[in-house]
Image 1: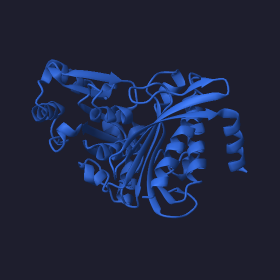
Image 2: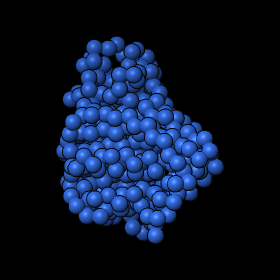
Image 3: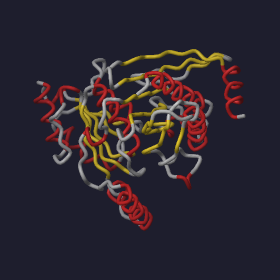
Image 4: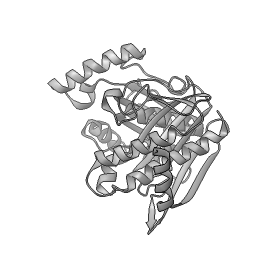
Length: 335
């Protein structure tokens, strides 16, 4: 992948974060998401690539989402893209910490192509590489990673989403003395915490969105961690109802059409099959790995984490933006 694209992708998440920030704390997650989506689309279409969304937030009938199969760019090398314009739309709407704009990109064929549906995800840092197994229960996995890392169970920390569907796993781990950090949303940033020394987090487990799962997998591969995942039917994640059964039937048809299996465990190689991958994450609100947007009049600052899989390089980019000039630049691109 052309190294210049990594810098362009960092700009894409920066601009999406700035667009989302305008809706911070206003209680309207859909408008915030739409603003970030349209900004991402505009900037991705300025990249010298033949980009394609292989997993995203929706399909063509659900525009303005960046839909699966959407083609982007000015032409050039073929690139797969996985996007989540805002990981933490509710956190953005409520002004809570941990919301980010993220994307992952890889050489053509490098990212799993799958529908936008629920995915069960299990991540571990480098010390747990090769020992996680989603076919096992979460207690067995935590014990195996603890053994590999040479840690007592009481010193292990797992992060998950604070959802009713995870309560049984949380209770089981608490009974062993394992620390569990339960956050409202934002499992992409949560998964990365497994790979940074300044974090206490050893593992991440949750059942959340598939686009976020593929994006996390790109980062885990680049950072030397490990991940397994599987697509799960809607009824398993959200319970039985006429609506969930209807959506699940559609999901199964889409999986069949795309050649992926529900309930089949996918290892890291199946999720991201190349080291030629770039991950970019910009903070909308303050988090543990990146700061949020900070504004003072016409000036705003952003912090972006960019990870290159080819070199393993991790960059923290702090940028200052003149908002009036930026608005004129965007208007020129629209015209």
